[in-house]
Image (cartoon, rainbow, N blue to C red; front, side, top):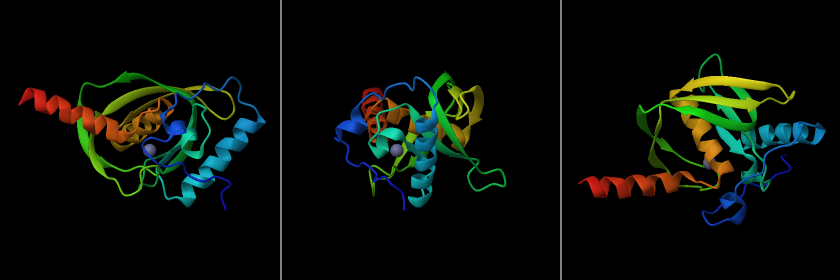
Length: 162
Ligand code: ZN
């Protein structure tokens, strides 16, 4: 059993806070990442951000290459997207913190990402499609943004342009 319960609700303060950067990748951070991986697996999620387990730190776990032979679970510490493609696509998203809600969300198809791994090493990744989407969704959590916010914004833009 995971030691965490998943925080839910669109007005939940921990889900709406801006998470704090991790100063040093020490034992407690490694332990947190490993517990988050367990919690994500138990919840059948494709990603999990620390605020979703009540911890306001800049750590996310993502499942990349979903449903392929190269499926992998990657912890990202202090992740930062350094490039968003102008090319965007829409796909349905859900969130462990907003059970039962599924909506089409528009996001960049390609991103470039820097992060620190659990050994404290700086890494860079170029991601596209589903992988890029999962990472954008999870990093939004670190800034207090939920996917439903993006849907509302898009609706407002669509209204203006019609
Ligand atoms: Zn989410």
